[in-house]
Length: 276
Ligand SMILES: Nc1ncnc2c1ncn2[C@@H]1O[C@H](COP(=O)(O)OP(=O)(O)OP(=O)(O)O)[C@@H](O)[C@H]1O
Figure 1 (cartoon, helix red, strand yellow):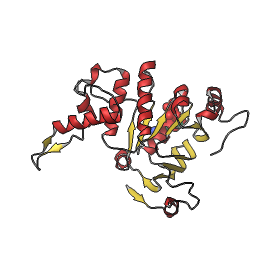
Figure 2 (tube, protein in one colour):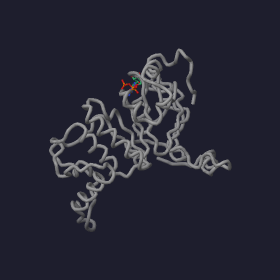
Figure 3 (cartoon, rainbow, N blue to C red):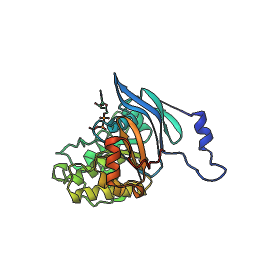
Figure 4 (cartoon, rainbow, N blue to C red):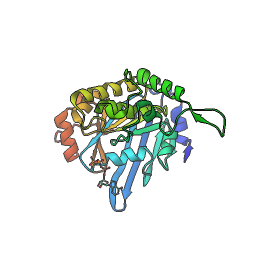
């Protein structure tokens, strides 16, 4: 993996003289195309996600949402185009490259271990350790202390972190998966369908948590079919249609009907659409 300064980004990272923009977008996708053989899953997609923003990606089945998510999380390399993080061009050859650049992904399959407790699930594979090599052992005190911090301070939930995950509700399980992402101290979290198959209450729990993380400055990208929830919680909504980004809308300027039209036809009859 390499991270390069792009000449353009150096210029852009300086605060502009008119004071309008002082920060780079957290994520910038520029002209990204992804092909799988003859299938064009993404075609010339460009978008920007601002720091601390909740950006939702919506689209019909096969529109390219997962592919874009996988490009950003290092699962797929784009066929062409560039990705920038904080104004620097990044190349992700695998998910740990994305992780090294502060991007964590919570997949729909939460991949939790049911018979282990919350803290163990959160730090699985990256436990704090103590002692010198070669006699290093897991530092359980530190593991539970840091889990408590993630739960209370970042997720704002008073869950008993020694509870085995199998006893948790759907919403609580989603929080544990988000907690596991937070353990890597990311500044971007990508969430794949975080509220699918959740009850109304669980959906609210997860949404409130996502709002809280964004308030803390973490940039959130949500892939979702839940348009109502997206309209309520996202700052902006990117609509993909057959691999192309056909619109970027703010919830205040659109509604369910319009989004559905855009998702299913790739255009709006009214023609009123920002092309950013
Ligand atoms: N690994 C792959 N190999 C071949 N084709 C793929 C691969 N991944 C995705 N595609 C194709 O790329 C297109 C976009 O798929 P993608 O999964 O990104 O859409 P999506 O919007 O996430 O759809 P869904 O909501 O159904 O998950 C589809 O035509 C899909 O069949």
